[in-house]
Length: 578
Image (tube, rainbow, N blue to C red; front, side):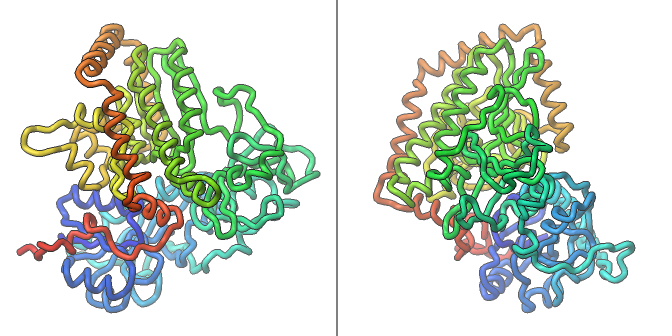
């Protein structure tokens, strides 16, 4: 069928659904829901058999749903209605939740049900639940709904749905999210911030200054302490701030000041944070208890695991340098395999655009910060490419984009969890050329088969890759179990098998010899110089496209048009197939 995806943005759920539907033979085009007239034009051009709306912030116009079947993905159980479904579920402590695919009608979220899928809830950030459980349930439910529609079946009226326990709930406003620091215990504080993570955050204040707070973490070492001083900020660690609750403390990772952008907490309040006491970990690398720790190391026999939990996968200059130091240290450990585990929701998305944008708000230079950041990313990638004493594995449990994809590709092996989305291209950010040695790493993996430029197609087409598709084109080496726990077990088993293999010494020798041959043919420094020559133009040249795109990305500006590589129906040569 011809299926139009009508969406507010090309988020991870929309990407995944588009890829899954395409894999099943459907013809997909995408339109951003900008205005009724734009949507009407898209429908007229594409003439879809079906419209699927995975992510909307307003109702589909009557002129569309009255004449076309529109399937709306609602992140709630059957009967749940309202725009804050996941927020209420998390804040109320629901143990099970779900996704429902409804047919659009006049009343929001009240149309007949085409499919639903349930999942157990975790105590986690809303953004994490959305990227994982909600996305997987939505894929399951949408595929089922599309099959039913194609088979000529009819949906079930909401009133006739058995055991529907959802109800109409309003938009959750800040009074419902408010934290009472004197009386809310740590678990309640975490639950409230988790329920608002991503958007909109919890309206609060730090150091007496209004702000929205995000990205909270527990602090187990202070559990059960005296309630005296609840609400006070008592320390910092790297970029996070430690704040007292009535029964302990929580870490605040990110903050958005009024009129500002979301930033690591200590960068949002630099002067106030500078006088706080540093709260060090007992050992920077060992995971000992629940706390805020963005880089950690663990060893299991001859396998070492390097974890880096960076919010939204963004890696600032400082984070890159710290991770570089950690990787260099890890290479001295008595392990045969190093697994770069990244974080739970993202492996890496490359340079930190918010921190770069912040440089434009003060006396700094966003061009200089961009330059420093990309060079720090390159230094990290170089350390990984030159790791000749161990087999290195990038184990992607979460999504990756742009430079993060090529940082992963700098490892010997890339294993990706089924369900993860990869975006190995840079051009969406103001036509960036990209670095991280991609011009060396990508051809070695996908090459050119003599028929077409595979590397160029990946970089120009700007289309996301599923974990399975990445293996098929040679970008990654394995697509492993989609369940998070099963993925970790599978990675551990495979890594231990490599470490115990009798031919490991020969394998490492061959790795070093191949690197030496490549270096003799063309030094890595030459690849880096060529890439950075292009990046210098992006950062310092006359074309401001990168700086404009970054500004709008960080400020979450509303889209004014759908990118042409997504809206196929707007191609100049588009005609409706016979």
